[in-house]
View 1: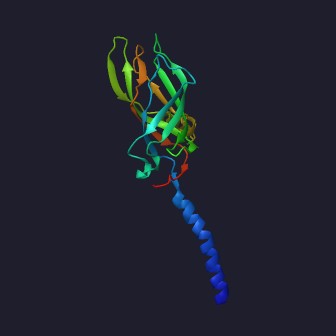
View 2: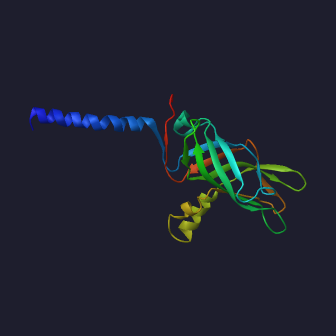
Length: 196
């Protein structure tokens, strides 16, 4: 290869490398299994919530990959199942997470499972007990691997998250300001906000 051809090849490589490098620097990629910590901006209670009810949560530190691009982002979700506490049945709340909106207004589809939450059990006598609930992804994995001998269970359980009462006489509450942890079930790629 002549010097001129080598020079042309190097120039072409540089032309393609610059946009690729710029794109990599302007986006943030969170891999499957990454965790997002958020704080509820309203209260959900199995005694009063309804299917289709919308809720929001604000992303709080520690941010994924310690990247402040996610500072102040809002997560949007829906209640997809409610069971009120009653005779012979435990209370249930089942949640689905739909989108995440960054402070710059850009929104992205969110595929995530709630894997931890600060909840309260509201007993009929008024007492409250704090607890941590693990979501449906773990249960989905167990079902998928033990019954169907497959790894698809996690995806089947990844509709959002379950909160289940431990006492048939108590409703379960996800109060305003409570901390939740979401675990991504698919990668999330967002554009980095200017200034970060």
